[in-house]
Length: 334
Ligand SMILES: [Zn+2]
Image 1 (cartoon, helix red, strand yellow):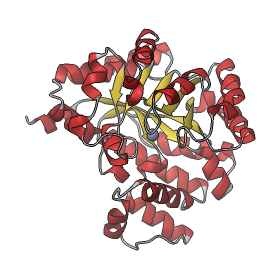
Image 2: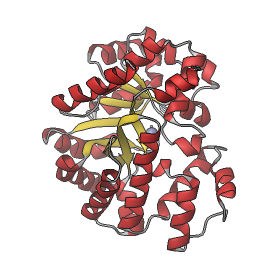
Image 3: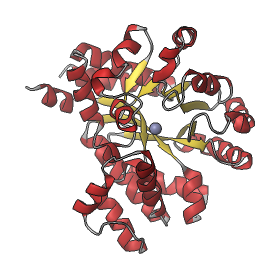
C-alpha cells in the first residue's frame, strides 16, 4: 500500500477546523440558490476558483460571504451533516470544530438555542463519527458580546459544546476586553482553546494563557520565539493545534519545508496536525497528514503517537476519551 492509502485508512482525530470554513463549494451554491444570495460565481467550478487562497483579505471575504449565505436552522443542519460526512469519509473518529455562533446570530438572526439544536441534528445524522463545537469570541467583538458567548457556552456544555474559543486578529484588540467572559467560563468548568501565536508572536500566546486562560492553543507555532514560553508550554502540557498548510497560505512560514513542526516535536511539545479551513486552503486532514509525513519524514509510529496525543488532549470526559483511544488503537492494528 502507498503512504497515501495507509493514511487514508487510518483512524484520525481533528482538534482544529472551522465549521463555516469547511463549507464545500457545492453546498455553498445550494445555500446561495435557496436563500437568493449573490456570490461571485454561479457554478461549482467558478466557486472552487474563487475559494483558492490568494491573500488574507480575500480569505476573509470568502469566509464572511459563506457565513452570510446561512439564513435558517435548516441551512445549519445541512452544513453540519455535510461536515460530519466529510470527517467520516476521512475516517476522522472525533472532531472539535470552531464555530462563530455570534456571526450567524448577527447576520441570520437565528437564536443560539436554535443554532445549537440544528447543528446537533445535522451531526446526529452521521453515525460513527462525533463532532463537538468550540464557540469562539472574536477579539474585536464588544465586551458584552464576549460575555453573552460565555453564557452560550455554559448553556451548551451538555449539548455538544466542548469549549470556548478565541479568534480574530492578534495584537490589535487586547484580549483583556474579554477577561471576565473567560473567567466566568472557566469557573463554570469550561475549557478554552485560543487562536494565538500565528500572525501574532510569543506575547499573543502569553496573553491567551494569562487572559483567555487557554488550555490549548490554536496554532501557537511562534512560541519558539521565546524559550521561557516553550518551557512553560511543555511543563503545563499545553497542547498546540498546528495547521501546516494554513500557516503557509497565510504567510506565517514561507513553505512547508520551512515549517517549524519538527522543531516543536524536538522541543517535546504536545502537538497535533489539523486542517483549519480545508476547502479554502485546498487541503483536508488526510492531505495534511500525507504532506507532513512526506516533508518531515514522519513514520507511521509518529503519526500514531500524534493521533493518540490529540485524543488525549480532546475536551472529552475520561471514559469517552479512553473509548476513543481504544478505537484508534483498533484501527491502527488492522
Ligand atoms: Zn483556526
